[in-house]
Amino acid sequence: MNTFKRYEKKYIITKTQKEELEKLISSRMVKDKFSSDGGYLIRNIYYDTLSEDLVHQSIQKPVFKEKLRLRKYGTYGDLKDEYFLEIKRKYNGVVYKRRVTLNKSDLQNFLRNKVIPNDIDNVDRQILNEISYFMEKYIILPNTFISYKRIAYFDKDNPEFRLTFDYDLYSRKDNYNFDFPFYEKRLIDADSYIMEVKVSDSMPLWFTKILSELKIYGYSFSKYGKSFELDTLKETILGLDSFKNR
Image (cartoon, rainbow, N blue to C red):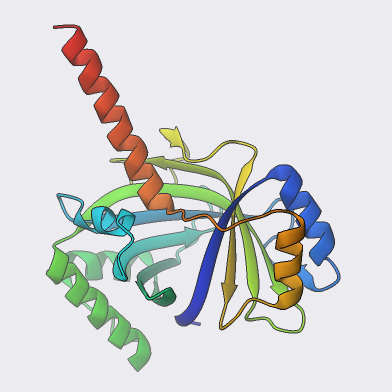
């Protein structure tokens, strides 16, 4: 699927809450085929303007925001030649995501020269045209690399209701190699998870009761925004230290 429209709600939970939650949903939800053995790795490059206008806009929580990222699944050094270029917009709480799958050669040719491959369907061509316009509108460049592991569940009776747990969140600046496994900073505590509920309309009542029982409450969180905030904090601290040493 290359087009998504859904509601997404985030929570930060502890390992204990996650384990209790998994027990309570076990009769209704199952892991997807990629989530065995501790989940799967997701690596992302987030794009922004030179002055980081997009992340500044995002952390202000406007009614409308948009971003562009490049995503890869798999493991380090697996030579998997499959990249997902995604444009994601959020308006009034509804998330609209459009993505296209490209090999490395086509991806580089598009990002560098705006060349759209000939052997793609009309929907993918339209998406790449949208992304091309986005790139020209903002004049973007790679800004932040973020990696994490994910465990995903879906409802057996309603596959459009999905639940994901992201952990081992790390980010770095300047090195955008998908096979470089070292990172500068951790985005959340080692024993915490970013839980995300993805639904096409409303959250099932049985699930909201479980959240209430476990005292799990919504929490606004952006991986890219958190990385930016940590960078800003680091720069502030370094600036203060420099001032003290004068």
